[in-house]
Length: 477
Image (cartoon, rainbow, N blue to C red; front, side, top):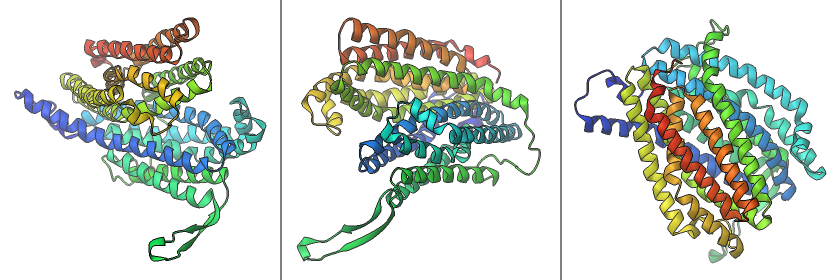
């Protein structure tokens, strides 16, 4: 339970003191989540660099396999939203027993679903990678990668769901530490499993000292990357599972008694989580169609688009952290029967996200090359990417609203309205305008990014209107 909750039912006279407390708690919740996101981003860069040395077919094999795997994991991440919202609500109400019950039921259902998806992965691996468009030269590698990683689904999915439980209690540090350790294991595993045994020259010419170190390696290449990923994610899931059954956090799940499925609790989790999962499906599929429109512009514009997305993703990290803070605080204050502070906590989270992301937007607009030239020096690519980054820079405060207000509404269990607004923005605005600007009016890549920015601005305003209405305050979860 976050510190401010202790005073949630007390009449507060000093508004400045309340704002200060909420700001402090928002930062306390957001910072570990931001660091977790940063570590995952850096891991992605390092992982791709290590695999990239194996050649184009290895990159393609992992990329093709990762898409359906990440889509499946997104479903479970969305389901964990229901767990987070319920746990936060009960923690706010100081009902530890019910919070523990939710955690236990989430654990049971995640294990059942994870085993099912893991078996499905073994049976359908080759069909899935072929369906994803794998060419003959990568089908074998992609299938092997998919099979190995899907073996880790049980613990991986437990890790995702239990991380949602910890965040619901206001503990964002434990998921950060666990995933940080997992990332280190992944990199070290890659180092020894991907490459063959090799000699590294560490000689120092200045002192004429020859130093050669023999590094053992399994030489498993793509399979080595898969084993490393599967082991690291399994370790993370197992560790967070042990933490919660040992009661090292605010909750303790007793796995020795009453392990029956409570369909009432499962229903409550799914009532919140299923709309969130559908929202993610529409978003991901919409982004895929949006990318398909961009691919019509040719290889150079595709490269410019990808580089701009990568550069812009830097600003997602604070947005992600403050959105999680909003989810936890809104849920806990509603549980404490203080909807006024629930709404205020959401506003503060969005305000802080807007400031940080607005600063990033300012840098994107004035000095875009600082970010873009990290990835390429190609003049033609930079000329297009530069304007795209400037266009989306304007929408950064609105993107903060999209992430923050959506996080607050999820914490209240209002995932149906988040679904409706996301569908309206992605499918009704972004895709429609992208087709108009790119295909019909021939605005090129800039047209696609104008469409994206308009979507973010309108979605941010719609989510603000919904959050300001306060109708989510009376939702029963």
